[in-house]
Each structure stands twice: as C-alpha cells, then as structure tokens.
Image (cartoon, rainbow, N blue to C red; front, side, top):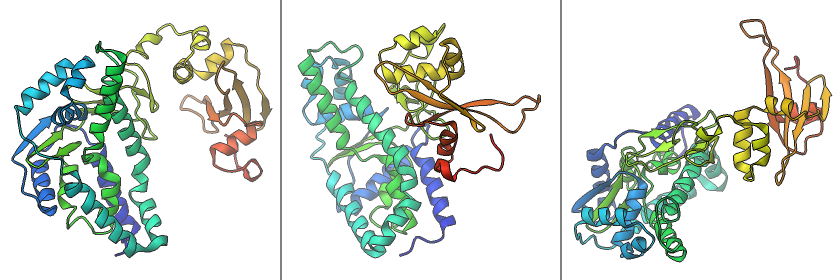
Length: 379
C-alpha cells in the first residue's frame, strides 16, 4: 500500500505530533477501551482491573512492586512511594506481563508486513516523511523520562546505602522497559496510519496512545499513567523553561531543562546577579553554556575584553575560550531589515569551533560551504 499524497501524510504527522506532546488529563474511558481492544487483538481476555498512575514514575514504582522489588526500593529510601503502591495494588494478583502479546508481536508483524510491501527503497522514504519527522524529539523525551525515573533512587531525600540505591535505579529503569509508551509511541503510529495499518491489530494501541501516557499490561491488571500537566518546548522542539519544570506531571514528577539540556530545579533562579567571573569559574561545562546564554554572549565578550578572530563584510567571528571545554565560537551579524524604531538588530549565532572566518560561519548557518555562499544582501 502506498503512503498516499504528501499532504495527507502531513496531516497524519501533525495529528500524532499533537498526541505525542499532548497535555492534560487522560481520557480514561477511551484509553481503557483501547487497552481492551489491544488485549482482544492479542487473543486475550480484557483485564479485570485498571489502576491509574499520576505519572510514568508512579507507574514504574507500581510495576516494580508487582515484580517483587518493593523491598529493594525501600532499602534505597523509597519507602513512601512503595507504601503508596502497595496500598493501590491491594494484594492484586496481576498475573504475568503480556507486553509481548499486546504490543511486541502485533507491532512486529505489522512492521514486517509493511516493510515487505513497501520494499527496501520505499520503506525508508515513508519513514522519513512520517515517523522520522517526530522520532528525534519524542525519543529524546523518552530517554530523559527514563533517566529521571531511575534517578528517583539516587537523588532527592532517599537515604539508602549507595549499593542499594544503585540497585533500585536499575530496577526502576528496567520497569520502564516493560511499558507500552502510549502517546510516546506516536512516531511509529504515524507511519502505520499513513500506510493504512491502524484499522487492524494496532487499532487498540493507537486509541490508547491518543488518550493516555505510558502503560503496563498484565494478565488481569493494567497500570495506565496520566499525560503531563505541562510541557514547555523551544522553537526547535527541545524541552525548555527558565521558571519551572519543562515537563511536569500531576504528582510533581518532572524534568527541568534549558534548550533541551537538563538543569537542576533551582538553577535559573540562582543566577540572579550573574557575573562573567562566576561563568568562568563554573566547572560543569553544560551549565556554563546555559549561564552564557542567560548572561548574553555580547555582554560576556564586552566584559572579558575578547578580541575578534576574523572580520569581513558578512560579520565578525568571535571565540570564547572556556577551561575544560571546547571554545564557544560565534559569528556576529547585523540584520539587514531595520526594527520599527529604525535601528538594526545584532545577532550572535553559534557556529562550529573549527570555523575560521566570519563568512564561513554565516555560510554554515545556511547549510552551505563558504565557497557556495553568495547572498544578494548581507545580514
């Protein structure tokens, strides 16, 4: 089956992008109906009970307790979350995980059939036009969430021994691998829908993905997690927020990030009165880059007395040498279009540290080689 027109694919991708980054309370009735349909497609009876978790982290603790690891988590200092999980489970006999029957096998069967139908040349193209457009942003989010769930055992108020906390981190990370990713399965579901393959065995999975977050399927019980309450991203789609968590779930579990980079929860607020000396003294290279962006490259250059590496008709090339890190190289350019007040705005654009001329830096920002850069009007 062909993918259809590119315009149709665009609609599919936009729809699944909305699902992947959707916030607000889950549509619980719709999600549970989707789960029941996925069980039926896998040849299983519908689960007897649904437990709703307030975040993937809460769901991972529930799954770890079901797997018999509650004691190990308590040794790591996670007594409160374990006690809550036990109370919610109430001695439930969940049975074994049915992840393979519900998600893995039907997923692989559909993908194998679609790949065969498309052929080795067309299959990568359809992926590039559909799921591939979402993959990097969604996968980056999944990796970050998994890491943060594991870190519950090694950060915060936990007071267990280091060995116990390391073991608990491994347990929680393993629990995330037993989950269906719900809304974060969007890239593959976008491709399957574009290929007309969501009306069969994957229909229930798609219905749940449109309605809820991560979920854990067992023979008689399913754990489903809520979607985020808040999600903040910058223009390229990276997690980004300076005055709170960039990703936040109803129970307080969340991620703090600046331009996609993890930062401590109170980091931005602690930068009041920031100086160039403090930036230079920061040992963490990634946090130092955040400080530079907040402080302002132009201000840092002025206050440190930096000298340009190169200057030509396209702009000025600057470099900031940082201890223990590659230099920050930027090209300074002036916008050719005046602001409403008649002034011309200056921009500082990050370029690779190997850049040697301003022209090469400007060309790089346009994705071309220096020799191929021939603008009609300089900016």
